[in-house]
Length: 120
Length: 107
Image 1 (cartoon, rainbow over the protein chains, first blue to last red):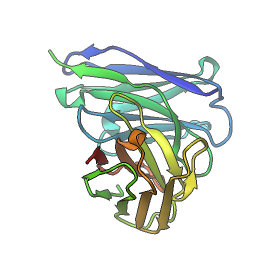
Image 2 (image 1 turned 90 degrees about the vertical axis):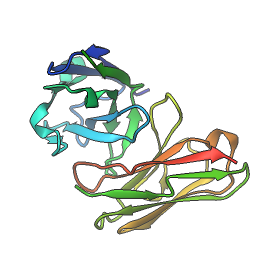
Image 3 (image 1 turned 60 degrees about the horizontal axis):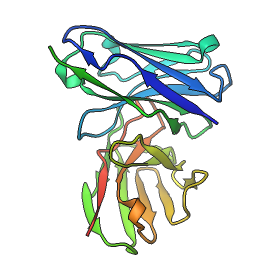
Image 4 (image 1 turned 120 degrees about the vertical axis):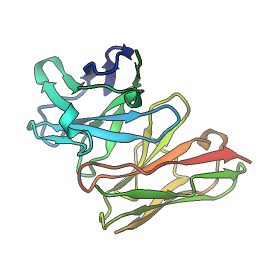
């Protein structure tokens, strides 16, 4: 059974850095073709794709957020970490991690999400 | 970025109705199109991948079609548990953009 779970702070002050961890089980991020991505959703709004890291350490970012995002993986710990700098209240959202496997590049399995509020 | 445009943004339908949601890509994406269902307070769930392939465990009343720039998600007979928001997503190139969502409400 594949599961993913996000963890991190629920409240962050403006200008601070957010670090989110996705801890997963049931698959390995060293398996060819597998990736883990981050997606966010502001309250009442649509999904926004943020970043993706592949089994071979290929990293992809949303161009609009690229300067603020860093995605890394720790294969031995089954974790993917997303760092976002210079937080603003507009970054308030539920942040999801999800697995991408197979040729379709779809997000097959999602974590439950973690709500992050940016406020002073 | 490839822009994904869904229509309608919302719709009202009754149990048993046939429902169709469309998604248009800003450029050709072949069949790299996925559909997700999201219920309030829950994570999205993959329904359809590669435009027309049904994800394991998803009821057969859901189907997808299309290629290039125009795609559709069809629910053949709407069930009470289908009232949700549906998103399309292109996985042709990064950033793997989502549509703005279609909320399916009870009529």
